[in-house]
Length: 194
Image (cartoon, rainbow, N blue to C red):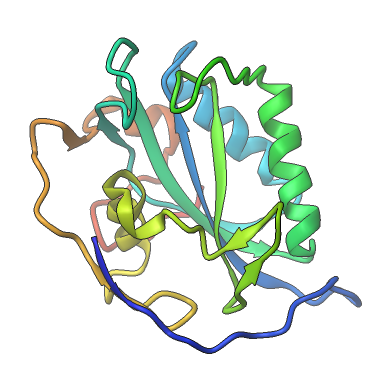
């Protein structure tokens, strides 16, 4: 992936008074019916994130050890009045509810949820980095993100576009699988409300 970085930093802190920010989250799973795991996580997020829009699902080979099932991934956007730190606690809590257990680096997981963007702010602390530091190195994240921002301009003003990748190792999940998760599914560049 290639990206042109924007060097501006924006302040961050707790949201107050019902102020909402647009967020982008990536979700991935390769255990215990990955489609259902992603669906469950989105339904849980819907109690704290409004106007959720979903990219299509994509299937890809694992990034790390290959002795595990393929992953299913997507990206969602929405609006929340949680602070970045509260959002991090929330997504980690969902991972725990869905019995994510870290057995090894880049190993199998029931659900993985990463914060890609929180408005246009940039954060770097020991616990949280926004935008996600590996965002532009992971086609299974960048490709579905581009379904939600087809002009390639990220909330922080960076420009990204997909580099060449192997269609054999990374493909869109088609057919009834989408409809079982997102009944309002539409084709690329047509946003859907989950």
